[in-house]
Image 1 (spheres, rainbow, N blue to C red):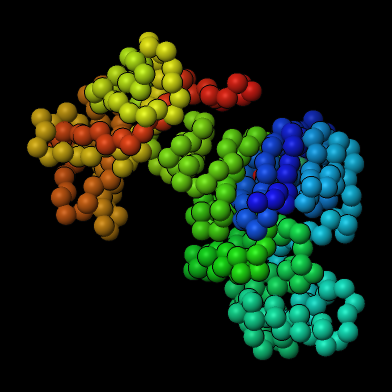
Image 2 (cartoon, protein in one colour):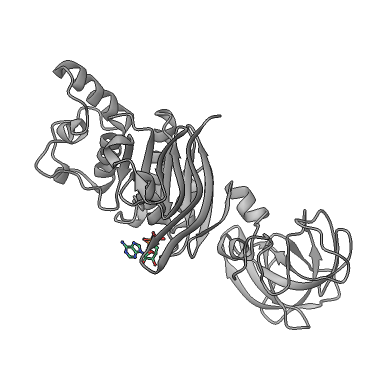
Length: 359
Ligand SMILES: Nc1ncnc2c1ncn2[C@@H]1O[C@H](COP(=O)(O)OP(=O)(O)OP(=O)(O)O)[C@@H](O)[C@H]1O
């Protein structure tokens, strides 16, 4: 698969603020990527630099193998063939849907232009609605018009900045999947920015978790959850806790839960103090046990309960259990570790990567 977008050591500064620091990523053609992270972590700055509204302070941006921006310079946005969808959609209220979609199309004979508009209306599920005006459409329909307009000139890449944030809760659940299907059908390469994990996972093939300008991990949702590379990713994605452990041999860690053995994310020498990531599906409540853990809290989740458990040493863990065997707060239960692999970090929350020195 060829790379449609690559960022090499991208750094973006605004005066004394470093918005983006040393970011490297590759987005293959036809793939939907997403930058995910808390507010102010630099997601929008990356998107704006790819679009050509900002220039890198260091590093380069490549689109389809061509370097379009480097330290202090960049091709203007109109030369990059980049489509953008912003939070507010920015549809032209005085133009019909068809004219909105046709706005960015190069001058073509009217019949060809109409054909392309009809194709796009079909693609986004709005056939025959070209004569309407945006304000006569629902939020979800307007969103689709914005998508059709951005796709009309066949951009190299579509950039979407929090495209669902102005929509109501119901649409925010269904639209990301619909949009993903539309982009797949159009074989579009896209880069989305959001702070919402559900949206990121519903839309994207590959997700980058950012914090304070750094890209921690650029990976599938499965790997972000099961094989987080930094403590920040481990804590930011999904639920879980970290418990203290000591390496006693290859793939063997002594913890308050007992001796844990398995394939490890990273080997450390015996005696190293580590933190072990414990997801709610890594520990099973075993009713027949001697009862080392106390149920502190339970939250009903339909098919299962999410329990908070306290170990004698004060460590707290989460465990998911089917809702037909339920345990009341205060009850003592035994726990059975069910790790398929062990995610370990050096104690104290430091990054595993040699080039990372914060956190
Ligand atoms: N034009 C600018 N001038 C000065 N500082 C800026 C500018 N644009 C962004 N910043 C700063 O850069 C940092 C990253 O901002 P950015 O908008 O990229 O983050 P974000 O992750 O997209 O946040 P949000 O989710 O809130 O939009 C922030 O500290 C922000 O204040």
